[in-house]
Length: 526
Ligand SMILES: CC(=O)SCCNC(=O)CCNC(=O)[C@H](O)C(C)(C)COP(=O)(O)OP(=O)(O)OC[C@H]1O[C@@H](n2cnc3c(N)ncnc32)[C@H](O)[C@@H]1OP(=O)(O)O
Ligand SMILES: CC(C)C(=O)C(=O)O
Ligand SMILES: [Mg+2]
Image (cartoon, rainbow, N blue to C red):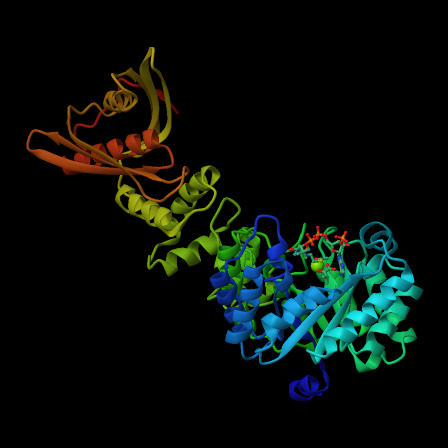
């Protein structure tokens, strides 16, 4: 069977987005009228089928927002939630009467605990209220969804009875929510299978899943319900919603797409709008998306470890089951950090436009690993700084091996340096005091190199942002007529200062032809 034929026989899952209703029930989230309209417009671009824009009876502001969303949105049904009371239904109609396809979402809890304590209604009262509410709403709405709140904890016999009443009264969509995120995927799927087996006329309505993430199973439960044969899932962008949130739309959408041959269903979503929608919802709700969040987290298409990066460079399918392009991101990221390997490092160097020999790559890779041990993520700017540092260091006479500085507001700053002379591989140790840490470092280096120089200029600035940013130090030294500059980079400004000073010394010595650079008096090893 080719892909066209497969699509023709696959059933289409209706995507009911409740970001603007259940999503807005996230503690701390309050979307303005304008923000709701902005998100709804983006949801329409994403291609969702139903937008639950709010709960019209909850406030005059929400009624107006639902009305405005319904006025603006043309390619999705716009819906308002409503309790099973006339006043709420009237408010929903007030908000939706001019909508292109008005859709009412009525609900009433059915579980024993909700009946007894919250509603104080017995089973008969619940059934008669469902019937009355749907019958009343039918005079306004042709599209009515009924939700049996807390269906997941409702006795299955009673649940079937309520659904039967709702269908007979005129509901077109039956939603069975796992309101408190209690069920396992198998249990949730079994509940739907049972209802499908037992309720007459169930095939005439659309069955819907609405899952909460209290135990982290909202998406798994929604997918299990799809396997059981339902036709609609209710979800929110980034999985926001009451308590631990709802099922995340982007996760369900990508699971269906990536595992199409397993689920054998499709959606009308324009998946390329997923990333944009996620960012918009995160920005307008103030609900930060964790880096490791599936599909839309900043790390979802980022690879840090050397073995993975090597695999990605050889064939991206080694470590990616879906492409970033499919959700509207431009590309995967190979993040250089302490777990990265030579292949990714070399690839990055080529991307940055450097043509380096194997030897240069090897040397730079050592510096890169040293830096990566201290810095969480290495940016392009950090790498450029390292390469530039390396390019001037290739003919160095002296190289900094280690540096130690002690200072305090009541003690004299002291610096000890360990410096290797490259011509004969001798290591020199020196220490010196100074009127500041930088001064002490420079004096210790002077003792090794034994050149009389004047420090003409010292400048420091940050290459990148953040508290682990690379510091870049420039120094200018003079010796008689000779003027040299030096540059050093490190996450530690004192180390950057030592590197810059030694760099300037090396340039000075090169200019002088290395002739009088003896450092024999310093203590040596090997
Ligand atoms: C699972 C869910 O997400 S359900 C949706 C939850 N969302 C919201 O509650 C947000 C909007 N809510 C609101 O603005 C307010 O709660 C309102 C305007 C709806 C109602 O406010 P109030 O009249 O002050 O009532 P309050 O919220 O304190 O209590 C809810 C009342 O509705 C009743 N109720 C709850 N669900 C339903 C229902 N589906 N149908 C009929 N009555 C219901 C409760 O039993 C309680 O009734 P009581 O006052 O007779 O005890
Ligand atoms: C209103 C209903 C559908 C709901 O949000 C829930 O049960 O979680
Ligand atoms: Mg809910």
